[in-house]
Image: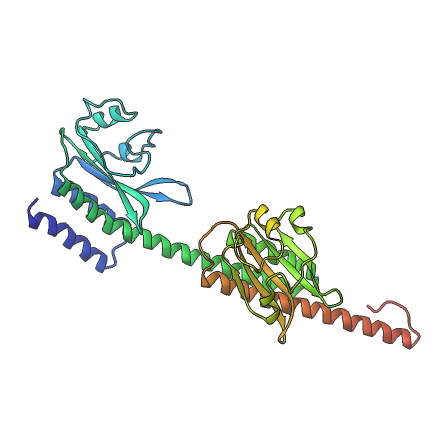
Length: 349
């Protein structure tokens, strides 16, 4: 390949990216330029859609819509991302694949599948289709991979940004729902049930617990939980001095590995439940710790700042709701006692 034929597509794609062209349009431009530069029948790019757990066509050129959008059968050339480049130099000589007949009907005689990675993770593939028997050279494959990677990286980051925005939207919606519940009721059990349910669902963790401090027994008793087995929840009394004691000093604690962290009180039971990481947040009111909110999850990336901030904000709302409910109960009790003292033992309503 001569230098101008290599540089021109890169210049066009770079200009499109700098101009803020949408990722899907950039991908279509890439397949078009690859087809033209390499003298192909056509080209297609597929990317892995995590939400649907399957490969989705993101761009195609030179091939019929019916062929591009048809669902590949298991074991076919376009069904999964290969670990390395796969070449078929002549389909008529190697006509043992599940989709070779469809390829031949499309006018394809040779093909190459190139895996595409982002941050060393396979995210999609580029498929090159030739109208005549052909063996792609190393330089041609490197050129095709480099150009397609420009687009697939843009697509991956665009999707990542969309996921971040969607996650923030879910966090905000859940926080608003919890706040609304706190403002509309003094039924603390109802509020805590909503808290542990929402946190577990929106963060995609194994489960969530709220434990409150009993000053008489100096233990953390279970106030509400979601997603965890009864066996785990009844494992025994939780000692605030042995179970992530830093919480009692008002500090947020992240346990990255329950196997090795010495701050776990019931290590065997925690491991048996499938828990691998813990985010533990103190419930504080006017500098006094009244309990803990604990988020329990399996193997996953470390908790990121947005998750910790969301959980901490919810914990603060929880603490205030608990304090308000307790204050209401104290005022109600004192009012009833006052009525009794004045000789009125009827309803306090």
